[in-house]
Image 1 (cartoon, rainbow, N blue to C red):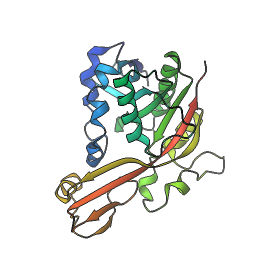
Image 2: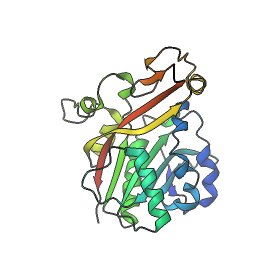
Image 3: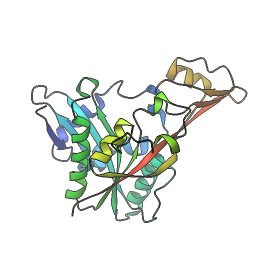
Length: 248
């Protein structure tokens, strides 16, 4: 595809296109309470870290988008809190003026009709190049493996390290990251925590949520835990940390 990939800092007029990805994620994924700390301010505070892929034939919409965020993380181990912890840490760093020392990916989203064209790999490469251009030596990513929802009962600690005969990950999205130069680092067992009342989960999924216990929700990586007596359900999603060392 003949595409142009730009940052929002270069093209601030494209900010409205970021919201034109309805249906790209399962509805319940929109209700992570930590997400608003980033997405509500990303276009204003982090435009250098927001990427859009544009098709010259359709300039009125973006074919793909990518979000990342700078932060300071000095511990050797990446946080088990994954995506949520990164958003929280970046927000605190910004408020107190801490100098960031790495960049974390938060999302890459490709329109369904453009998937299977190699665009996801181009967006990962663009995110790597952008972080390096901004002076960082490392990009990390709490990756949401794209095939894990087909085996929701398999522990992520097993799934993340499954490989094909050629040594590359079985999971397609992890495979894209490894091919781009990333290295699987560890599992973030509670990367996203999404709580809700049973009424909210019914609205998000169309499922009854009428029995206490695990509920298999389409496109969820692990079962959602339902507690009828307490009138709530909680989804705790594991992700996989991937480290990308960048050229200076």
